Image (cartoon, rainbow, N blue to C red; front, side, top):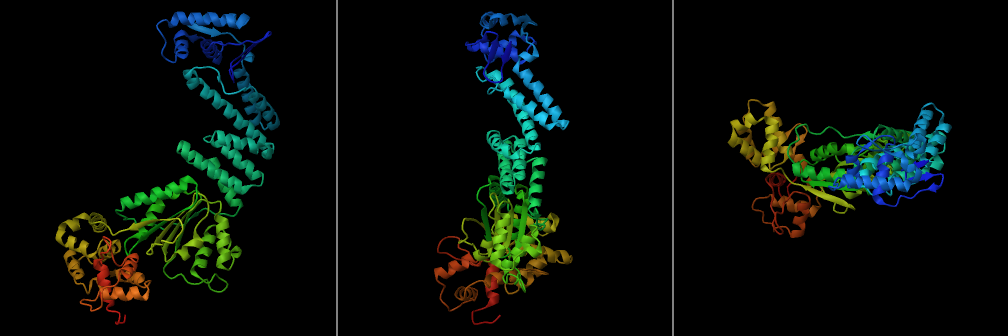
Length: 573
């Protein structure tokens, strides 16, 4: 006698297969076959037959179904017995395909653990051959499928994982590739299949495809289970990267420990960056732009720190502004070439293997990052030409650029304009820097100091630093020094922090016409005509002039102080 539930329901005796056409009889037989020889209560059978809603006549109807099933099974019908307040089906273990499958699988696992790999592969193939389709495929019971078919399917997948492990240990990776691709497509949440596919591709000499498989696995696991790859898959990736000489870089410098505010901007940045890293689509570029001293670098670093775990191959950082010179003898001869040399070194490329020219370095850099998923932070970009050669090309990578220029001509870039802090955010930062008690002691002076700083984090930090090193100074004393328009920029300077220098860097990028117009705007009672709208818009782009509504323009307090300090165009500085 032979019974089967691993596929369409099967009953077979010496006369051949016996059909069980009635749906309720198939449910009843399947429920008895899942655990042959064990009684199944009448209540349990009634729940399965009527999906948890048995009629009042369930007891008599169940007896009628059992009687008819015995008739359909012929001589095998005598195996259905009344027992334990229900029924059981007597069957020897070897007569039920589920038991034979389980036994062969267990023997195959034992052989695999004993390093009898060829025997293990044979046993596991025999076990899987017993499956004629999805378990209980023609049994119309939602409850039975929900409670039994799922774990039966999982046992089959477990056996498939074991068989694929045996095949790979036997060196049959080329033959296993097609099946593993099908399995990862059909069951993307089974991480073990991804591990095996990655291993098969690696052994078949396809490291790039293996890395691509890891990216696909990570996306599938995050999408389906909201988890990151486990230790085995991460280890496989590290091995692949190490074999190609790639180093996972983590270059982000420490951010400001007292970072405050910017909750809306931080949420927008992190959502976009994390979405880019998790989607594994085309690389994304975000441009964070704003005026001098507004806190672009601090915000960029905080956002990058928060999402760095999303980028499997690490984070890269380059400070583009601030004295990058040529590469010297044999170097790229321009700032971009120097940055490329630094980034390639961070990615594990030996110094001797880095070519001399910027174009060659760009080509190598793109080749190294072609299969990598990285976050690149470019701080202080001057223009689009400086950024383009540095953009990673790997799927799921992202670049966050800070710039005083809006970089409107950077292809595919998504801009985010960073405004000065709101009055409440500015106060929160000052409280963080000086302490709530000190501000509460001089509320009026604190308000004057906040107004003088124009919402610029740079100016607020300078004030806090000066007050911190001069405990005898009151807030009122510093606020009084800041009140003088001709001295405010002189007061907003301590060590390397200098508001005037920050404005000077923005001013130095203006064309001569815009520079002259800006200087005239700061000259009291200037006889020169008001600059035209085109020139004023260039000053808005440089964040030296604001335009709250189209056609109207104004100079923020500190920008106006800087224009006054410069003097008219005829004056020399």
